[in-house]
Image (cartoon, rainbow, N blue to C red; front, top):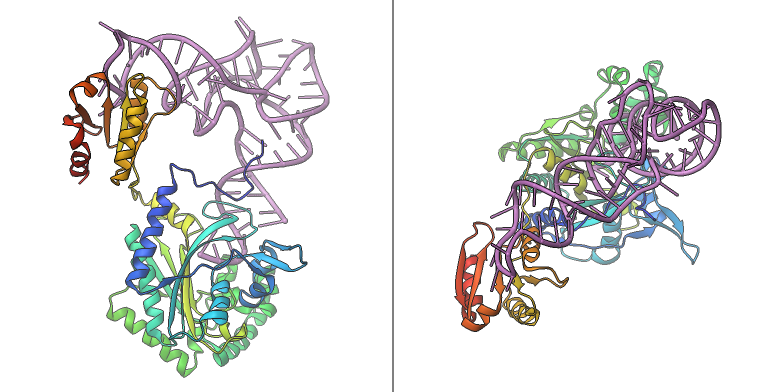
Length: 418
RNA sequence: GUGGGUAUAGCUCAGUUGGCUAGAGCGCCAGGUUGUGGCCCUGGAGGUCAAGAGUUCGAGACUCUUUACUCACCCCA
């Protein structure tokens, strides 16, 4: 037997409705915010991710699904959603009226050791807004994420924000931070010492207590912001305050992708105890489009892990209802299958979902099967019904049976379903 | 990549200091006076005890190796 590859999961028929539930909410909320869907390829040229996600990140260094295609090109399965959308923007959308506001729901691939809330193929819902530089857009993206998470059923959420600055701010700060880290390098873990040169910002993110204590005294990005960056961050805070959106400023919040500038944020549900706590993360990336060869274009967005979201919903006890249950099951006595085919067909044409047994079950087993399918109603066809024209429609929830003339069945079912 | 845990029926798991033909619940299939599901009763199908080697008169159990799964670290959603 050949089994499923490591780190992947089948979404089976008894569970797929949960995915449809969150996807439907994503489509509903993005519509309210005037976003359109974009679908980009599952694979791109490897170089796109190297240049956007960043060569110092773990994602690019050790987690990408990269292979040569038959033409000898280096191809990579998308490890996240932003790069492909940025590429598509540069290629096809940069002459559109700005801002261009889009969302995507896509599988993504990272070669990692799987664990709770982390798979090798996972799914992201993400949002990108191109061409609006102001903090209003940062706020709008944050609000959208919050509305979505709340609509999905998460009611205790922690929002953390930070600004890591851009341009000069970033250079100045990196220098100061580097000096500080080098001075204290004997107290840092080996990994952090290695990060000092390559990407000092990442040290801020270390979870080791020994490193954390060093960081308590470390210079903070928000103290080194340029006037412009500072005003941007203040403006964002005031909009969030005005709109009663609670947040806390976490000066050590640094996102793991290199393209972020200025605002970064994360949503952390309070119900989860696991370390995979961040369900949604995002921020501004004003330099990405230019660095990929496009016109300088400010941008902001977020990515949200659907597996993690579903895990959080489960832990929070959110009950997701399967709205796709069968309306009518048509049961029939021995020899009357042709009548069942006819009636089932009529119901379907009338927009009522209907099914009947094609495996030769006994009448009793048909009822049992109808029950398992979650059928709302069951109609039984037998010799008596054909003679009298009077058919029993059983409500499978309360067991009540209505007796209805053949020509009135569809009308009755319609009324009942409302 | 590093560290921990687990592996017995489709699923969740029992299985005593090593000892008869391998167990339960759930699920599946069938039956319980030729036509009404859920509850109950009865029966049935379904297992190379992850794989390989070792210890032993005897291994599901003990030892070793391999593999898979899982959780955590790193990192990320």
